[in-house]
Length: 383
Image 1 (cartoon, rainbow, N blue to C red):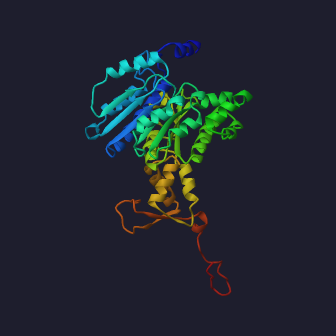
Image 2: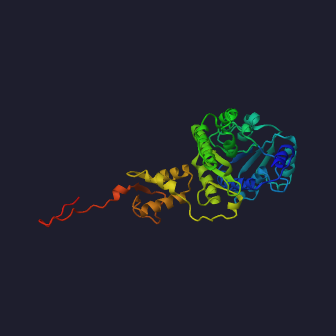
């Protein structure tokens, strides 16, 4: 471990590790969806890799800027894409030099414009990067990749600054492992406050066990994003089958972002949608059907009400599920008699997109009947 830390600190290029490969797999899946939607809808969009690194690992795998570029170049819909600007910032000059060498090795496409900024820190250069990303167009979609080496490099104010545009999104590497280890050290409190933009992290400290505490930190971070007016989702990047080493957190202004994000989670963790390791990736589909119990619980709370399909899908997305999970949950409730489609009366599928669903509770299912027949009258009374 000491050798690896020294490698990361001192050498321009370092070795890859399994959890980084899982992280880049999440990137690729999300970018496949993001590019497919954004680059065929908008004339121009931008991805900012604000902690770009050298673009390659010592043992050969590509770094995040090259992962982004290759996802564009190898996308099945590339022929219909409009322009993508990829802006890369890296602090160390030797890594900037290596990144430029790696970019020079890529095939050329006039619709992919890659800019490697002069060396610098994201916290100092955010305004400059934002101006370069938007080019005077506040409605231009911009996806920020925020993957620093440590907590201090990513204060919450930086994350908020990267989401000022109404089509800005961020993918944050949230260091829940470090948060778990250091949160009870008094000297670490100011760092935690800056990282969460306040004291939201304190709600997680009392959790027992590292798995529960790390999840609680991820939930607290999402709560802070919610206070900033953002929708979000998270996914644990694990080492072997252990608890999450860190979490990836998507923050977005739109449910369309969640509609790209949630399928990635469930593709890589088909049972819970919460996290995956390199071991799990090799055994995709091992656990079979997804666990939709929390979605079912949310739907049960609607007893006595009618909900439109658009409202139901919105709730499912915000809870971290896909539309397919909503259909599964509704099927389960319908079998119990707790969900009934009231509109349309006729449909080719059970839950069409113009559905209106009425929900019931268990008390509504209690059978009506007759009291015991009185022997002397031979009559019964309906109850």
